[in-house]
Image (cartoon, rainbow, N blue to C red; front, top):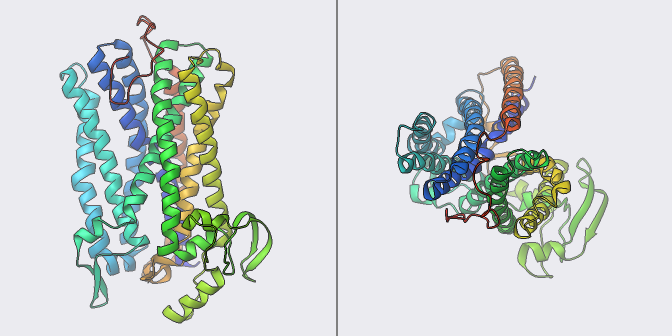
Length: 464
């Protein structure tokens, strides 16, 4: 039982479980806050009912996210103690700030929001959910600052065999994080928007509380359309930056074994990693150059050339990530994102064309589309993290050097099985609760006039 493999598997499983909850928390907190703001400004009870309904689903998801997230930090001191020893002075700072600055704030104010109905003024109560939403997204920022150090280490020096922080400003202004953070947060907004549209579509198909769910659908459609377009745009910029910072990840995402000039884009590729070559591929000439450098003529280094360069710089070893995993994870992410973009355009068509009723036979697409954003999120993180293999901190520390030297494989296996079982149960409970309360629908709100339904509410909380 190899402790390294088991530790990697455990952290990967825990991360995938945890990130099932995070994007929805980031986006649904903001959508809930927008709905309550509209309620405060208009005084329409239907928006209060909407806020309570979507807020209940947000709270269920938030609780599960907290439970799964805490375990991740424990692993740094157990399975990955050598990693923590080496980079703890740098990596630990943003994690500590995240807990003190963001997590505690959002945890306190979510309690204020839950128990503050009819006890606080409308404005103060709405402010509480905005603090929760802002805190959740600031929390994501600090976590991504820590992750960006692993992707593109900056602001450190090696002293006495350990990495120590020398420039905190460089750490928080890491160029990687200012692409990674908006991409992740906007993916969360997309997830929440399609979550709201999917559940709203379900109730519209049942013709249950049509007024409230049409309003919910319209708000989510606007947010979702803007978010998914920006996700794609920022993702494009991230891909271009990979050419400078992690060329091996870029090459692996295209199964580009040998240097090409000009470089082609792989539509399909079946690779033999042992032989370090393609078995079969379909490529579009010049397109990778266009996507990476905005030109049809460029040179992009292949995996084999990069491997030779790494051996020369860092010594003997295999510096090639699992190409098949990275290649297909990228395409699953892009494919799911493209479908979401198309559905977002259709949602806007329904909203602007006032066809939420007449187009109802196609609303079932939005129910199934809830899963697409989760697929895209998971595939994106798998590509991001697996593409960095074999580095735990890119070009600074190898995975094999970060694993604990005192935790035997059987202990890692025991906790792996335990976490997987417990998280599996929690996932079932979470999905059960979300489905149960989502199906229950929005109570009340039917008496509110629908005469102003045609005009979608502004994201800034303007009246209908």
